[in-house]
Length: 613
Image 1 (cartoon, rainbow, N blue to C red):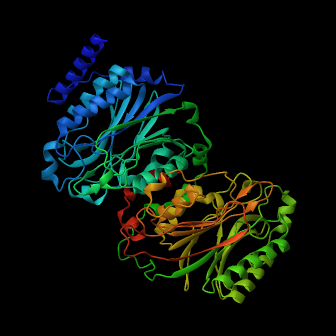
Image 2: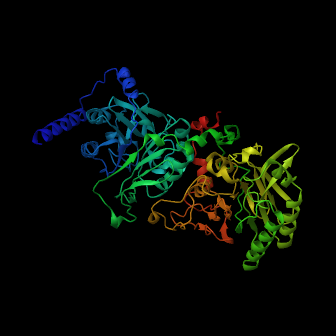
Image 3: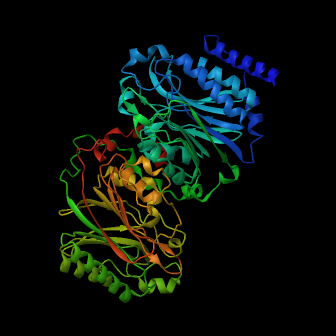
């Protein structure tokens, strides 16, 4: 045992000497790398996240400690270790001059020090650090990937937070995906996760694992279950758990499965009084058999030809945006449909809406579930579905129009639209004066939709006098963040989602409840919440309950920022017929983060792969 300790200390000393100024000249490792890739791991393996609190301006001490913690994780069997953002230096630097003594090239001294450990233990490590580019002398908030073969690659943060913009340049590498023997690894950093595009770039390039160094106060880490689900990849996040220059980081480092299940989590500390300065390492198993999963397969159903607006940078004086806030009193109606029986479903709809209007006379918007009057038709024959179809001015529209005018409300409803020989899973917005304010044809069809429906070809936003600008998604559309992203670029103030959800996508919220000032209700659904926060548009969802297909209810309002206390999500039960009524004000112009901030801070120059087929 004594000999082992002496040997380990010697290896660590060599690493530190390398960091102190002796450059390590890597051999040509192309052949070695290819050989290692041919030895891909097929059995479950352990990964680790180190919740590590770097000391500001103490690069040497931080690297020494991080090497020690990384080796401990490697000894414990971890084949991948992830450390926080800026883990070699601490986070807050006022300008280029203040951080200048602490930057390093990538590859360079720092990566060389970690490469020795990675080679010794045949494992990988991702850690955040400030990088200097030798050619331009620009600084970047970066992260490096080091493995058994040495330095593998790096990532430069695409979506920066305000404080680092005073010293760092915007990342210019896109989101590389590195093929290793434990899987395809990509990296995002902290604020990146507030913009679904950065994780999506990893997903469409085949990433199995997203390493996520962060210094988060809540927003960045709360988005990770959605990023895992949307892209079918494991996420290994590493955060800090203390306070630096008044900025408190809440810990909560976590490892997420491709289904958005929490596999491990470090302590969450919500106040400076609870700071945990000591490092915490968490572990979880990753199973390569889960790299291929239904969420990753769903990436094949993307519609890049519809996402061109994602490449647009809209100036601050955008004349198309709505600048008037509207008070919305909305009801999401959920009921157990009688499949194929429009008359019985009309009776349910009338009863629930009139009850909601009676309870709140200011009600001005109602959202009904997908295929509102027929119910889901996945068990019906093609002939039966065709018999239930109608044109946009058909019986269903006449019924909804009369109800809207009688109660002075706008209604979003779904129906089977017939247009010549084609059928569409469609939704219409009827305004309170009984006019058709907009029609949307579902663009991302489910497996059952494909048996009878033609996919729509646009993602419109409709402008109304009493509601503002409203976009519509239907069911599975919500799983594709590009769809709500287009609505955001088109400046939708809110989004309505008629749904028929029984768990076929998404899942229950598993983020630590304490990290949100306004708590999420028990029945909250990750993907619907991701639509609202990702597009910064209030989102009203209507879903069914019951039937033999066990629809899961949860009709709801998802909001812009419950994490820091701006607003409160509201979610209905999973099994009761009810009309859940919510009140909110669109366009939160004074909020710290809103749709205006989102649109102006996106970096679409690097999003081009999202719109290529």
